[in-house]
Length: 168
Image (tube, rainbow, N blue to C red; front, side, top):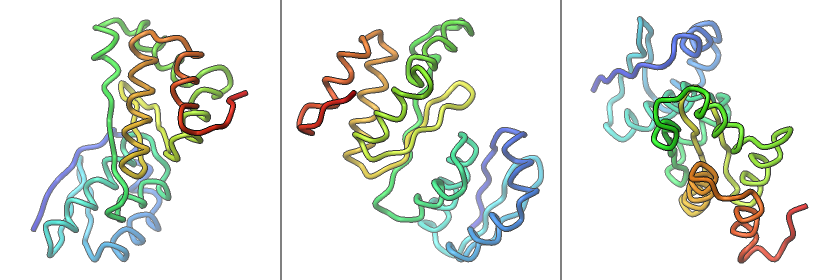
């Protein structure tokens, strides 16, 4: 089976340059990957093909290669949130919203990752999450609260519920 996926040019250049990434992914997934203006994936099994496609999609959304490789494990999921769904067409508003999710010196992003046991990448017009299902769901809810205008304190309280730990 063959499928294609398009990722941002700057991420594709990294993938082409770092041959070891491609080699490791091919080895772990028993697939064959080639590059043109997009990424071509060949695999014997449709599930392998879809898993490799998710890894490459995650890399294209700004995750480092090691984090993206987690998606070969069926317990891990990728969720992509389109920031423009919360900002309208305003580029300035989109940047402001991404900044709310990042927080001062990355504090908010780090807290969300810690409390949900996920990894978050903010790249282009998207915010992406990789983790186990329950963590991804909670991280998505938290991020959508921030994008919808909830205060950081409200979001931190939401994360603390059930955790028994204070965010400081």
